Length: 147
Image (cartoon, rainbow, N blue to C red; front, side, top):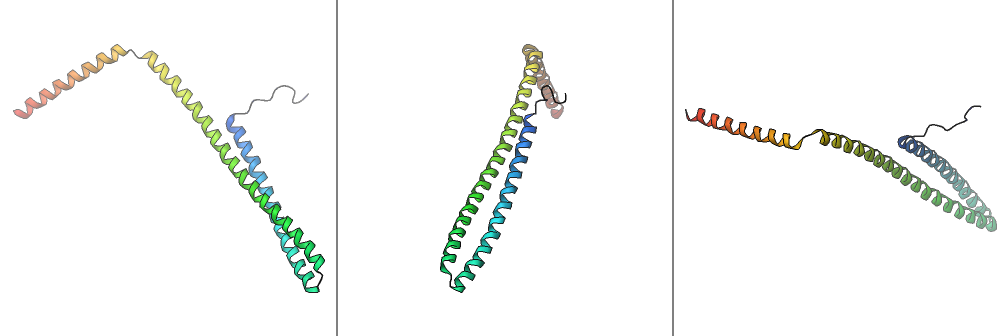
């Protein structure tokens, strides 16, 4: 049937992109929940004022406890959001490091190939010939300047 067999392996870049996408989605969900808690907190604050105004202190105390729980939950959501942002940055760094490692490996292969093809004695001879020719050119230039 469909889907039988191994799926093509994702590259590091694709996996990093998918992880970042999931982290951003989770961060948005956390933000929505935090805003929902803020609305709930504002609603409870109004109800506490209303209960205190009418003299119902037991209800006001119970709602104040609920407000304390909501504030603690908001603080947890803020902390989780920060942690998710940090994870997103670490994922980006990890993907960049993997890419740099891959490129360095390719560069090392190119350098090895160039070193195999290059004859050190021939290069040294060419450099000596180049130096001799530069000296001759310098002497010729000096003679022309003297004349």
